Image (tube, rainbow, N blue to C red; front, side, top):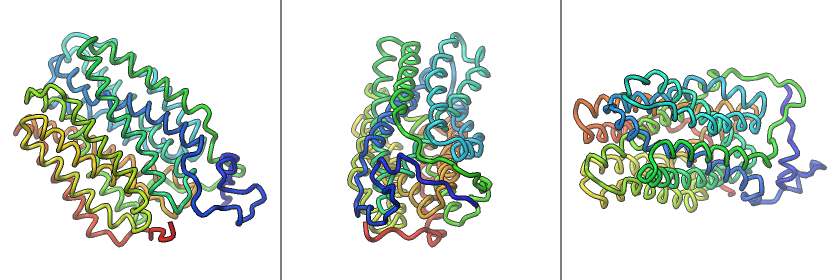
Length: 417
């Protein structure tokens, strides 16, 4: 098997000397290179456009939908990400990270304009809406998988968790900005203006990534590992299972907080997402280095517990205080959990399998989000929002049990970071 060669980006980042001398490596390379920053801004724009649709359930409800409809419409987005993940992962390892991101960002730019076609009762455009949500989900899946694979190529192995966490800050900021902008636009101008705005966010993401150099270039043909064969690796399988349950919990955050807060007559709905993202950003800024030093296996159990507690707290929602506290706890758990699971999956793995492994990780989250959206929608319709958030918290606790049982299948953390 021929291995991929180091590309000009790696040299430009100061990680590899053109002469090949091992002495050219510095002990702690700088993470925030121009390529890293450009990609982070692209990711921020992409996630702002994505998270603006956390308020999309209000659009569904406005057109006559109930909790089951919300679950199906929101779940369709995640379902698309799951079904196309093997193809996306192979594409990223075949045509490159940057070209894949270009395709995804084009979809994120054009697709929101399709929502402008829908008006009247939900039943009159149900199938086309679900179809559009599926295509939207494909675009987002391409962007997120390509971006994190590209960053994994850029970040030095001894700072992997820290680098992935720092890059993730851009997405978390976008996840706070998106719902806030969406709420302001919807109140003043309506949903049509929101769809135009999210198309603009996709265009910003497309433009911002153009200066980024490709990090993975095939000079000779590389024997590709089948997508599902990667899943058989014990550590990857453990991460996939825990990530699935993580995604189940995220379905509650992404799809049901806004209608629940509306039912409780809370005016400032986006307070939850601001609190959530702020907490996650703080953990990313200060938690990445300890995770690299002491190991992801020590971080992940606490992250699952804290996020579950945040979801359980929503059972007692009566005002903005609980909304803020719940978002902060869930955001802390998310802030530690996402980069730790990602780093655990790809640490010490071959570079030509990183696209597939990253796809397996993000695809498992999307799979959990789809199943969670549908199941939680039915639970909410039958037993109310309180039961819905209780079930989502239980999913995170189940993830804790799986991780404790299968925890030995992990890669050793770097102690010299």
